[in-house]
Every structure is written in structure tokens, then in C-alpha cells.
Image (cartoon, rainbow, N blue to C red):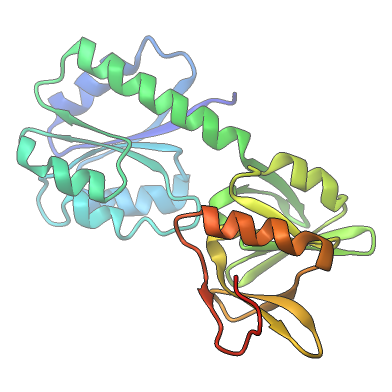
Length: 248
């Protein structure tokens, strides 16, 4: 696995130094910068694109909780909150933090947190795609991908409002993606299952899925039964359309 780029954010210099010292045994983690408050952290995340942020919660100006809302969804870093107050724990995990450390930091508790961090970062790396572009490369996490379609000898990867065209077979990308979260619904289409809003059958087009952004995609007849089973098994099954003559 490539080096993990870490950012340390705390208004206390001693606290920042302490985290650096605790990170010293981890050769695969590189501290790319230190920040004194939330505003500096937001700018550093946008510029440096770290993989991991150790983030104090109580800081002057923009605090840690508010700062995470400005990190953005695109390549948002993993976050470990650090604070002197245990009562923020619930809010920290609601913000999808990987862990929550209470000052003063102990070596044993820090090692436990890093074990969780490294496990999660390895999982992220396994499901990250490197997309070549005209100006370099873009790293895409699986969470960013909405759907993929085959176009002759290329594939088009759709991520929100962006579209990346890559010369790769669809089967290669299918093998790289988590089969519990992505499904081949047609010979030329792969979708992220939790992005599906609706499955219906139309007289002229046959079976169709509608994504959360309103895009309709075809479902092949031979893949329909398996897709229904997987959607029902998930925690976010799409609603049944009133126009569909079949039950999903």
C-alpha cells in the first residue's frame, strides 16, 4: 500500500507534537502538514488532499466538527477526532469518524486507533481506481462511482456530474469493484446498488432502473431476477413503481 498522507489539526502546539511522536513508529504514514484551526484545515485538505486527518474538535473560529462539513465529498479524508471531552463521542461517530481519541493520548489507545485506521485505509485502497486523464491521473473511491457503461473499446465512469472515459474492458472494472455493492445489470452497464431508486417494467423498453439522479438504465432479461434478489437483500431497496406490472 502507498504511503498514507496525514494532516494534524490542533490549536495546541504540544498536542500536535504529541501526535507526531505517536505516529513516528508508523513508517507508512507521512505527515504532510500541521494546522492550528478549522479554517487552516479546510484549506490544507483542499490543497494537499490528505488521506487521513487527526482533528481536534474544540478550536477557536471554525471547530473540528464544522470543518469536516467543508472537506467536501470528493476524496474526503478519513478522520480521527481528538479532544479533551468525551461528550463529543456520539457527534464524532455521526460525522463518520474512524475513531475518537480523548486527551491525554495513551500509546495503547493510539495503537488501537491506528489498527482500525490502517485496516480501513487498506480496504479503501483495494476499492480505489486510478483513472488516467489528459493532465495526469485521478483516484476514484468506489463510493464516488454511480454507474459505468461500455462504449466500444472504452468505458465511461459516471461520478455525480463528472464523466471519465477510459480504455478498459468493462469486465476488468467489474472485477475490481465490491460485488456486494455493485451489480452488472446489462452487458454494457454496472451500477452501484445504493444509487438505485426504482426498478420498473415498461411496455416499450422492458425492465429499467432509475438512479437517484433521475437517469434510466436498461436491465437485461437474464439479469433481472438476480438484481431483484440483491435489491431486496439490501437495506435500501428501491420503491416499487405504480406503473410497473411486476412486483420487485
